[in-house]
Figure (tube, rainbow, N blue to C red):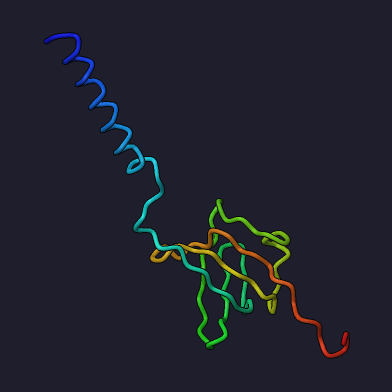
Length: 108
């Protein structure tokens, strides 16, 4: 094998690695991320149940990786409006955002 042939083979291998590297470096494409918005109907240290605008109630498990924006898990109360980010099929809340409540009739 000549030096030119070795350089050509090495260049092809590097090009192939550059082409295929996003496949194993990227997040799973089959993981479908979902959002669910509603009012908290129950909450415990392990899970949160949220009732959506269509009347359906969904329970999400809490994990050590669950992130809460706008407060802490312990500060979430029944009746709070939340947005939950989760992965379909998993049922674990990845990210919970406390949404601002609309002003009550007394505050208007």
